[in-house]
Length: 323
Image 1: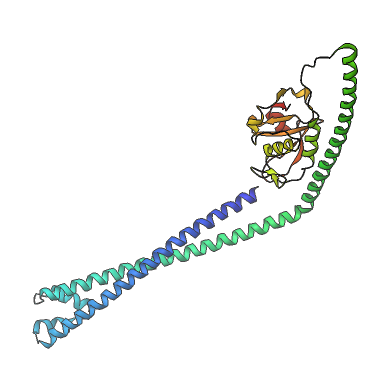
Image 2: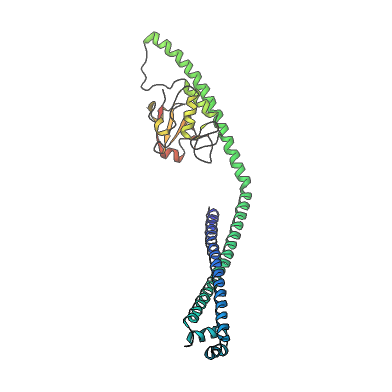
């Protein structure tokens, strides 16, 4: 469990790093575009400035020539032109544009460098998380490999136990059918001799043994949410389908099924009775010997379970006999 939790956290970190990297890459694309535009604008501004300087030089304006010749660099020349009194408004405007474009280029360059550094860091972190995931998957695979034999043994034992329980349930059904036939004959004789006897609870109809046989034939069918066919069942879908095979129509809802038939106390359960659990959220078909057939939950299959198991015993709601 700890290994699975650790792997899940690593996967979440990887997904988060992937999202962060995608955001950085989008910003990089935008800033590269802005940087290219700023460099283009700066180039145009510098070209205009060069043309203006050439024009000043050709016009032989001594003050402008002094500004040009006295500059140690382009930046120094821009500063000199910007502060010279002889510079016209046109010159000042060109210089202002060049300075603005140059500032934009510098800012864009710094952003690009910062985001490229962030990208390198996130890529490195993402690679480390990926390596961690691969390591943990390897650990899980090795753990599964070491336990596979034991898992297979437990699965085989569970399957064998289910088959044995199914065979025992079939034997009980045959015995109960024979006992019912004998009881029916005895009842006929009793009616003739002494008059009918009144039962305190309605006996289950003969179709119930057929329902149990039908449900047992579905052992091993996978649980499918909303399923109501041999391709897959949920709990109430199994009950509905099994009873439909003997001509009894029930709704596809454990809550609705609880309103059918008559209530039966736990000590009077007979094969074919419906047993309910978990606030009517789950239902199964009783098969005798404190056992019932159910479609439990996702990842499991139709199987035989015991009413005495802790969860079922603790969440038992009641039973209904469908007449």
